[in-house]
Length: 144
Image (cartoon, rainbow, N blue to C red):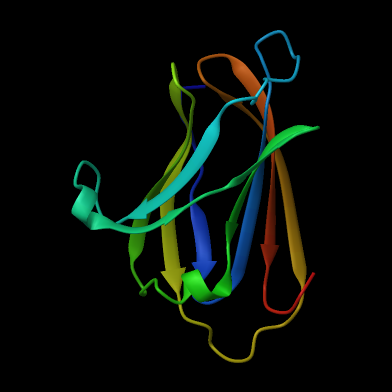
């Protein structure tokens, strides 16, 4: 699978949206995120910093090694009904990796949202042969 992994998101404006990355080394061991920071950038186009709409700071946990990407409803309301692009990157003093990229297609709710939780799990390979499990949690209103 090509690096970075591509995952497209359908997003209802104002909902809470979360996905979690569990990076692993190519031998299946946990990728050590010690010293890394993460950035989730949502923009209208690539290569133009002025097109960045949101820059979020995902939380990095070391046990287990994971990256929590979280879009709360307040930040979500800053998005219009458009198609955006995004990247999730990690970096330390020596290295920088774009782990996931894709499109975010946004749309408004038709009516009152419900509190159903959809959980989708898929195994992906990121960083040219470094496998990872990514769990996508979509919270459609309410608190899970």
